[in-house]
Length: 413
Image 1 (cartoon, rainbow, N blue to C red):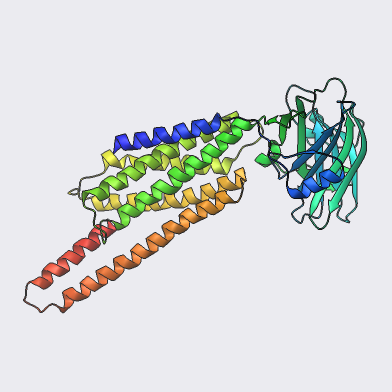
Image 2 (cartoon, one colour):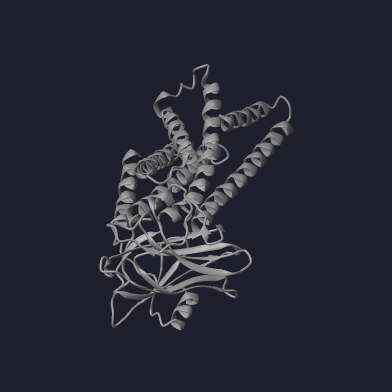
């Protein structure tokens, strides 16, 4: 059983390793909505950006490589006020501070406008961001809202100074939902907002996302914990709860239960360790509640695993109290695990398939548990009724009743 768990773990990690080390460069074409808008503006290159549902189009002038038409767009999702920003950064890496930005704001009354802004360290500290001159020549700035598509686009023509390289251009994008006139307020601080930067080659559209490794590790962290904590551990609990009675598996039941718990524990602890590393590597965000729940899960799951060697013998008087503690803690852990997985999905904000996949896993477990619970009680009540209908003094009534009582006791232990 131990060798099987180790083999499964090694194979799983190998697959994840290949995922992490796959090429970071990518070019995903834009949606049909933005492609249509881009074609109207004679922009032939268009790609989906990695965060915030944003899409980016550009066209480098054939006569002057420093002149670029840019187009960035995103859906409003019924937001009444929103601002959309795009900018370039001449520093060594793409980041908010130092960005020369173009920001378009859609006001509550539906009016739109766009200005240039210089993002400084003071902005990060919370100082007001006001329109200002930048060292990038910007013309034909325009913010448009397509009502039928609920789509906001920002278009401009820029001329880049010699310090910028179009084959390695650091660019930043952002979306916010509040503004005071021409002063955009602070954007949300979710992971996608923090990660809205990349270095792009405007000649071929390939890009290197600064947080590419971290982004892949976050997904690995989530997958490991959903499979380990969220799938194998509940499966092991169901096996322990229902397979002694009414579904008898003999000694295989114990090995299946322990096998699921070991594999789930190994995968869960690996995912937890990846999460710890991500937390330590982060300078921009901290998720205290998620980390608190994760530490609780690791600590008490480890305590549960110690039962493999430290549980009392069946003949010990306090065995029934230990069983009560072991079962209660196990069910409590499953509840906390479910809450924390949903919380982690909300933090990561991947596509909706993650949440629905986990809802599907919980749904399958719920159907199985309900069906087995009904079957357990139906079988017990049927056998108990049969035992009471046996004639007194035949000797079989005591045996049948004893069997039902024994099975019931096994179920609760």
